[in-house]
Image 1 (cartoon, helix red, strand yellow):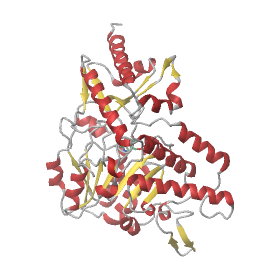
Image 2: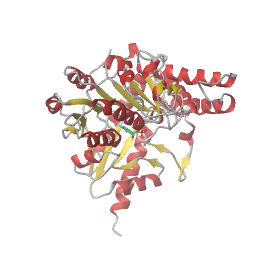
Image 3: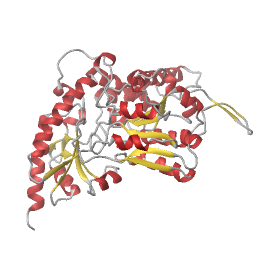
Image 4: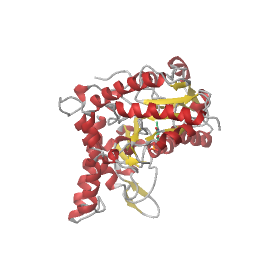
Length: 427
Ligand code: PLP
C-alpha cells in the first residue's frame, strides 16, 4: 500500500523482526556516536547533510578492501568475479529496496547531484526544445535547479516554479495550472532538506501523468526516513545518495523506467559503457552499463548494499515512527524557546527542524552549539530561492535520524538557551 506522500506501508517492504524499537541498541551500532567532541559527548543532529555509518557498513568496506578488491565486469580471474558478484548483488539490493521492476533500472552514480545531471543531460537534451518548460518547486535543492537551468539556457526553454505556502507545503492548485502542452518534465523533491516537508508525490505524479508528462523525484532526504516504492509511485526517475542512507560517500542511485533509460543517450563516454568502438563509431552497452562509464565506485556500491541490509533489519517504517515521535517532542520543546521561530510546519514532515532566533545569526548559533558538542547546520542549505521565499538569509537546522533520542533533543535545547545567553550578552 502507498500513501499520497509516497510512503510505502509495512506489508510491501520490510524484513525486520516484530521486536520493539530500541533506539539505544541502534545507537550502539554507530561507533562515532560514542566519541566526545570538544570534551562533550557528540550530539549529532546534522543528518540531512550526511548520516553516520553503522559498524556493519564500515566492516563491509574493510572486508572488501582486505580480501575482495579487483576491477569488475571484464576480469577473467577469481577476485574480479568475486568483486563483480558483490557489486551486482548491491544493485539487486537497491532494486528490491526501491521496488524497481529489474536491476537494469538501477544506475550507480556518485550521488543525487550526478543522477539529476545525468537525466538533465541525457533525457533533457533529447527531449527539451526551444519554448518548452521544465517544472520545479521553490523548495528544490540547488542540485535540482542548476542542471535544469543550464539545460534551459542552452535550449531556450523555461523553468516554471511551483510556489510554497507559509507552512512549507507546495501549492498544488498552482502546480496543476503550470502543467501545460510545453511541459517536458516535472522535477520535484520527495522531501525538502530545509523544511522537512514530505510532498504529496502520488498526487504530483498523477497530475503530470494525466498530461503525459514524466516526473523525476529527488529522494535524497526521503530514503533514510521512510520506505519508498517507485513502482507504486509510478515515478519515471528517482535519485538518492548513499551517504544520506548510512552508506559511503561518492555512491548514489538513479532509478529510471527501463523504457526511458533505453531511449536515452549515454551521459559520459568511456570504458564499460560500450559494446564495441572504432574511430568511426561506438555501439553502446546494455542497461544499466550504458550509463556507468569508467571504473565505478565498487566499494561504495557494496557499502551501500550493506547500509540497505542494515536499515531493512531495523525497519524503515519503525524508524519513521520513532523519528516522527521525536520530531513531535522536539517541535514542542523548540516552540517553547522564547524568540525561536520554526521555518516549515507542513502536516507531513520528516525530522527536520529549521529555525531562526530573534536577532541572532544562525552561523553564530551553530558555532556556540558546537562548543557543547551539538552538531547542527547553519546556512541556506543549498536552497537559496527557498530562503528568499521565507525572507531569511539562512536558518539553523537540526535533522534527526533513526539513532537520535530525547537526550539529543534535550541537549540541543540546553545549548540553544546557552547560545541565546552568550550571544545576547552585552559586550
Ligand atoms: N537534493 C536534496 C534534497 C538534498 O538534500 C541534497 C543534499 O543535501 C542533494 C539533493 C544533493 O545530494 P548530494 O550532495 O549527495 O549529491
